[in-house]
Length: 104
Image (cartoon, rainbow, N blue to C red; front, side, top):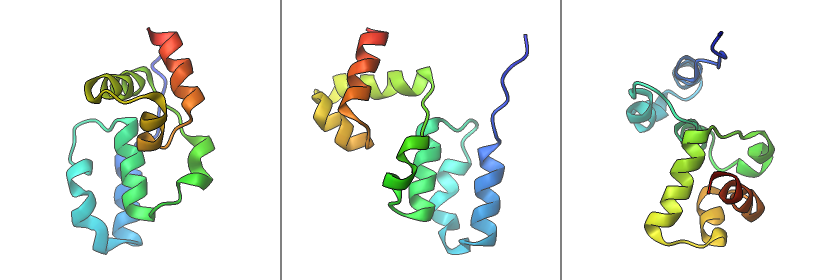
């Protein structure tokens, strides 16, 4: 079976930082040094580099199973309701409810 290929975000974001935002290199270096970047790492990098432009890009976000389980575990760990969790991760309450039905 062929493994699905995803973009190499480390190279993409490193190039963006080096060319357009060299003053944010130290801010993002801790995330870029990780062995493997998760979806949340990519979202955090995007926010740190470009600022709060989340409303424009909200439709384009995708989450893999491990990220979804991390978000749901975060909810359980900090005893948040769906609204609080949605606000924290900038998601829809309906998305969280759908994930809970699917994974629990």
